[in-house]
Image 1 (cartoon, rainbow, N blue to C red):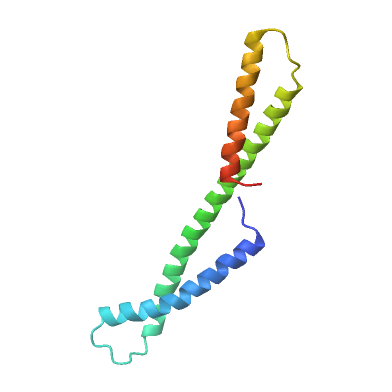
Image 2 (cartoon, rainbow, N blue to C red):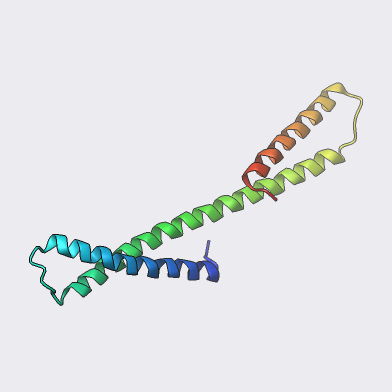
Length: 125
């Protein structure tokens, strides 16, 4: 599943924000790692490396979360469509004088209603 351009742009902005936020974290790590910190000029590459690594990890996690959410939404929509097909198929069945078949049709209709109710709670339309 590929990301839409707007979603890629959103993730890119999140990544840039993470990079700038991790610059501050990188400086804190640098100060803790090197106690003789006296305005060293080599800290920016270390901070950028830390920021890029942190941003890369955050972007991977955010992308996986988004893809899983989209897959779940796709599965729910598939279930919703199948539920409607079953509902229309059961509605097309003409009532017959046999009580066993009427009972089966009633049970199917009730279960279709329950599925639709559960789907409505998860994904309102």
